[in-house]
Image (tube, rainbow over all chains, first blue to last red; front, side, top):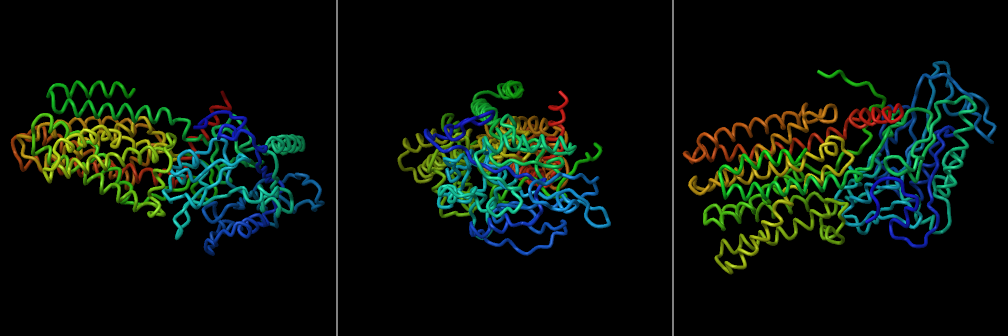
Length: 308
Length: 299
């Protein structure tokens, strides 16, 4: 049993790998995302993820709506009337006013675009609550479902603090991003990162991505983009840091991300302790029910005391 | 009334995924697990103190509760034919895994004990099986609280200290209530005491959950709120009848017992639905986390 909470520098070793490649991940820099959805398409195509309906949501240009069993990359479109800032998108020479968080047209609406994905948490609740062992930690430190083992119990679904994994309707099993486990094994880049035209989705060794993200954040802050912040980069956060983390230009909840997620297994010890105390109370209630009339009230007062 | 907290979200969409667990399968299983687990305790006590009618009823309740609960659980799976995958590994981090290793032996023991009781075959082995069921009974009645609490669903997770007592008390109430309905009053005294004690534990623990502020709001309003209120009122009525007339009138004992069973059912469905609502509304995820984050930053 691996560790359940807190900082963890070698997640693969914790999962039982003695020798292993470096931990791989994504850094999604949303400040250069142009909302093209190439990542969504590349992911669907490579992983043969089935279609999930043609729904008009009314949510700006986002008709994908959410991450789920059939959507492993989701581009969010936030429309907001905010002041414009030149982010100095590197290398592409786009004219001012055409990229992220800039004014669009006469009505002054601005977009924040962000390509969301499974976070491949250091402490992954989906993996830890899975009763069959279908979810496992790969040698790259990513979290993957084995479809031949999953029996569709659905426990991973409410366990995920980000609402990523879901059960596929009509199939019954749970699915999510594999961080292209098959491509990683061949030394290739995941399909979404490969397809991203602006390098908003960057793939690489997690330690290196973190350094790169710190540099980018400093650069943006220097340019006066104070709203820029990293999300999921901190290895001391509630999930031990994300394997896929982000640079955001607003509060996380604006993008549909939880502001301060904590993995449920942090409290696992307390949960089992209270289950044990409650079971012991039941034994007491059972014994008392047959031995004494007066014992029941006495027992009640102690059981309530124990709970505190 | 507490004013509605202001918060931002992505077009009001949920952050968490709602559990894919089906109703009535899962709340019914929560109820049946409690009923069966506590009935096994009643059966062993009845056997030890020479109450054959109580023993018979409680053994059958334990076995059929476990069997029906197992059917509900398997039916809830996305791939029911793969239910044996549950016993592929034993993971202490997964209450569903631990629970499978409680439910499986409990079902075997309680089934064997009930079969021996009904047929009269192998009475000693039957008694031994009954003792085995009584060992696994209390964990069966309470582990389901860990099952729902060990999730990101705020209404469930934040109640993880109280839910095991709510579930245990609710199970004792159901087992005692069912026996009060089916056993003559002169043999049902332990069932009455178990139901009364369970009701008291359940009400006290549930009350503590209700006081948890915004995170407990789903337990107070809407459908789950109505279910929880109904459960609490029914528990109070059942307890009043039991205390006043439980040992005198068979008719009133049946009425009180049925009220207890109904209250236990309402509690389980109420808690289940509160969790669904808690996952559905981003408010319950964002507001407490945002406040926590601000506390961290400021201090």
